[in-house]
Length: 304
Image 1 (tube, rainbow, N blue to C red):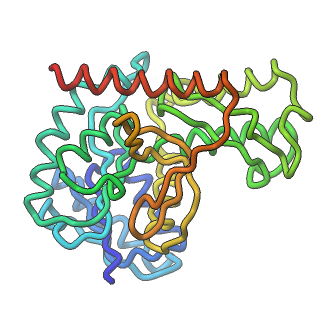
Image 2 (cartoon, helix red, strand yellow; image 1 turned 180 degrees about the horizontal axis):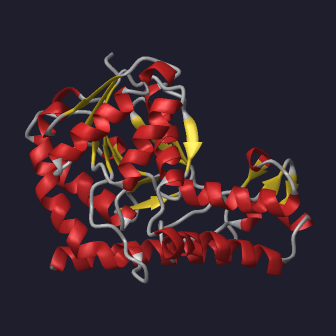
């Protein structure tokens, strides 16, 4: 296998992904960058290639077009109208829906038969329409979902308790957006439930810190890029290395006809299965609310 990845969208998120991919151990052998700004892509490719002698592995990096998707294993899409300060992810709905409505069919005309990995907001809605417009099986279309939110959650808990984030077992679920929630009943530090360490007020403070972190970063530097770039590399490696890793990617929920983030097993085939964890009644209500938020957005986009 070529382990070929095509990146569409070479803005700050796309290039953070590219830089992280080059600097981390990965199975990617061929990496193609595509963007409407062709000169910028050529410059980015030159810059990345000049650092290859310091990279942990060989990689064929080049500028390309949609035609390069034909034999790609993964097409990663970060292209889209960026979120401005004061905007919610849902505010981007019409602009990015229209972009994907024209872009995905063009990619499919190349004969692409791999896996789509989406990181464009509003994430769950855009991932849903990628699936619809591509005609691919749902298990081969996934979004970054709440994987970055989950990493933010583990960082904040770890910082509070002075414990490595890698030993925090907690997830953010639902929409990648304002209706996301933390099922605290399933969160633990080591083998002990999180409520043995933190009060309800502290848990709520951490949750709000996770939910609002992107807005706080955007307010200060304009956008978020490094965290999501590393997140996309992690998902890429889980797919190409057939890891059967559990991550909160945005994957298809056939019962509700929606893409939503719950713990999901991913491997070389894309999504192997969603894992439905045991939730309290209140947590179940939050998940259903989040699903409805995404469904309403999908219906709104379809009407327009």
